[in-house]
Structure formats: C-alpha cells, structure tokens
Length: 250
Image (tube, rainbow, N blue to C red):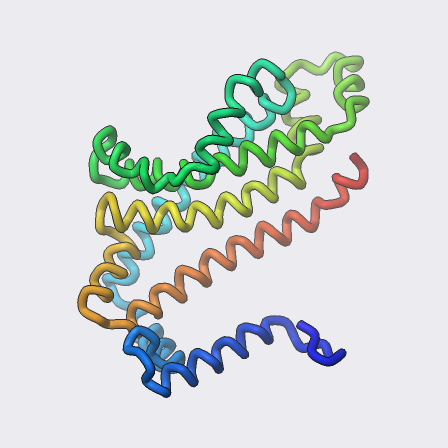
C-alpha cells in the first residue's frame, strides 16, 4: 500500500483496520463488535481447549475431503471438456448453471439424499469448489498451443500420456488459479454445511457463541477460520506464481 508516494510495509492495511476495530470496540457502540484486543485474549484462551480442537479436526476433515474430491473430479473433467467438443457441449451448460446458482438452496436436497452426517457436509463442500476448478482447467486446455498436441501424436503418445504430460502441465497456471478460488469457495461450503446440515465443527461453535451472545468468542473462532483460509490461498497463489512461466512458454 502506498500513501503520498511512501510505500508502507506489507499487511499495513490490516493494521489500520485493526486499529479502527479496536477504537469502535472501545467506544461501545454495539455489543456485536468487542475490542480487537479482547478478541485476541479470548482467542489464546480458546485455542487449546478440547471443544476447539474437536471442532478444528472435524472442520479440517470435511474441508480436506471436499477439496480433494473437487480436485480429483474437476481437473480431469475440465481437461476432457477442453479437448473434446462433445464432452464440452454435454457438461458446460450444467457447470455454468451450478456455478451461478445459489448452492445453499441444494442443502435440503442433500440432507434428504445423504442424511445429516459428515457425508452431506463433504458433498456440500465439493459442490462449492468443483465448478470453478472445472471452468479454469477447461480454459487452460483451450489455450494450449496445438503444436504441442500434434507433437505428442507424432511421437505416439497414448491419451493417458498426453493427459499428464501435455494437457495437465500446459494448463497448470489456470488449474492452480481455479484450485485457489475453489479452496476459498470450499471454506464457505464447509461452514454452511456445518450450520445447516449437522451442527458440528466450527459451525457448532458459531451457533453456541452466537446464541449465548459471546461475541469475543465468536470473533475469535472467525479469525482462526479467516487465517486458515488466507494461509491456504496464499500458498496456492505462491505456487501459481512459481509456474506462471508456463503461460509465457505456451
């Protein structure tokens, strides 16, 4: 961030917003916004407790499983859509529809089909993440230089070899971009699933603290969730920058 020609250190904007949060909390304008210092004190007292660790493990399991299924299904399907016109015409309307549709409305249907357990939460997380991964992978494949594909054919590469030696690596920048956005959407999916399907994990903590007006506890758990999502997103963004030279070579 730059102010009047002076470049401030990274994350300076977060410090400014933190100071504003502290001032608003100290003014006591609303019970919903406690001082940030109080939130951090509560955070350190909550992190090591058994309910928090149980909620963290349940949320991490549902999130990891949902993202894994989204990647394992989304990347191959996106590559097939990019390289095969028939597959693209069959799946593209559905992908666009689910990407733009309010997926929260599908949660009651998932509850009827798969019950109120962890399975429905994982499926909800997958549905939030998979569509953008498919579209980004498809876009990456469509931008591949056709000479690479022709070279693979000339050297006798079978479809599987062309898949992981040509299509995957040439489309990798777009794939990582899609995975990064999908991970962010998966965070929304896992929390919505834990709030609407089965009150477990961080969803249970949010419900407990909100119902008892423990706003410092509520914000402390929310900060942990934001920090975890931001960390995963930044790691994927770093990997995306590391492989960005593929786009220039392509």
